[in-house]
Image (cartoon, rainbow, N blue to C red; front, side, top):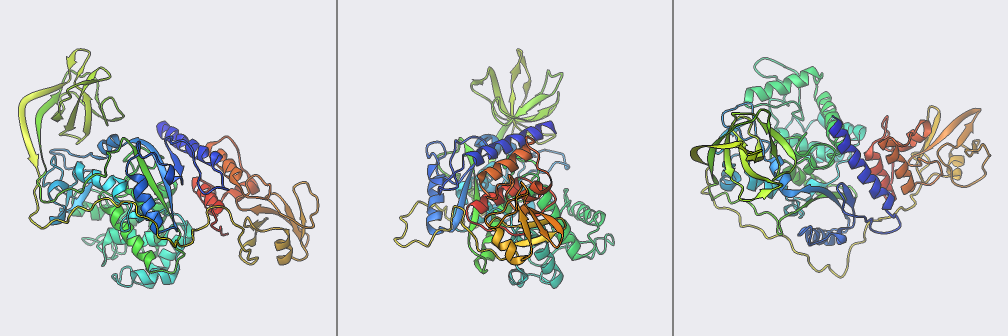
Length: 601
């Protein structure tokens, strides 16, 4: 728990650093590439240190000037991330399930299959363990910064859909989703929890398919849990169809999801609070591959399907493509350290994936032997004395005074590096035998590998770019000013004249109690109407100077970090999402406002 707090604090400090050096009057905000750094300065990506990113982003941005790209420098080593993610290869332990699975089929055989697990089936019997090659291909962001796949990086915050939008995108799906109760629940969940409505649809479809499943039809399973719905498959874990369905329906029953609406609203709450809000998993990519930085790498991931982020992103793109929603989208691209010079290739389904190993055992240990993500790298597990292992690769040279052998535990499925000899005693012992493990290859024709997109010369006539700095928005006094108990809430562009127009007999005073006759108003000012005095809450104005700037974001983040306390009207001003408290997501909204996007009450 303490380590998670430290990681989160580092994450917050990195964002704070980003805010302090961000200049809202320029088109890019820039700063050093430290861990957790977020930047819009795509042109400043160091091609030597981070090869292949800049060209594909620039190419897509040239085609779509309305696409806003942010680069997240994770500070994470690419090979350590892959090792940490590539876990769960137990030999005879049915309780261990790999972190990454794919649905069995000709397209995804061969090199897509993990050679350690081979043809072993998981979940409902239709899924196989994904190989390290498959993981590398799907996790490499450079393979997905293209027209088809980029929406897996879209920021999922914000409600921008109507009933008509959702009705349109679900009309070709089954009755479990194409009905008034489900459609209205999705719209209400999107608005109530400030989460993308199309994302909710894509998530449901990914979990239940076009026509629904046992967990979404309300008919129960084996005469149990009749009338329970689990539209997001939350709590549906385990190995085997019966276990998965029963766990999912039990979760629904325990949480009172006895209607379609209750299931959608309840599931959306979990997705928003436990993923987007708590762990900053604000894109489909981060929900599948957790490298967002607010929790341990590869922990707290929404699903095992290795294709989930890509497939849901494609749905998201298609939904937007047929809508009337203003096409300005923000994409957050993770950047890793020590990436290969070119994007990781697509696995060949026609080539069998196999591996040869030594059989081994851990010896001479009075305590656990640590497993690391790289030679002398991050700890990711531990092995007990006499634990049976496969020795995949013997180290030929030392790192930090040790030979680090690549192994996998037959009991726990832990995959990583261990020190062969410690204090002169061998810890990784060969049993004298070896083995070979492999999957199957497909005989179906395979798609030709597609080269990574190369930058093209932008056309002479470009569409107009969206605003990147704060613009004044036209004020609607009916929607941008409202009374809420003891407060008058107002959007950032509201001034004295707007309040007087809406409330002609209002007496407005500044924070010093001086009556005003014109000008800007700020958080902490007061308005007296018919003998009742209200305190002004100007959304985003956390320091009470009447203007929303980067410094207000600094105040907000300092409060999150615990170095400043925001109370009463100033706390309300920081809650841009109109929630009970504020978080880093409100800072994101504030930045979006500074780039030209309008807020709402």
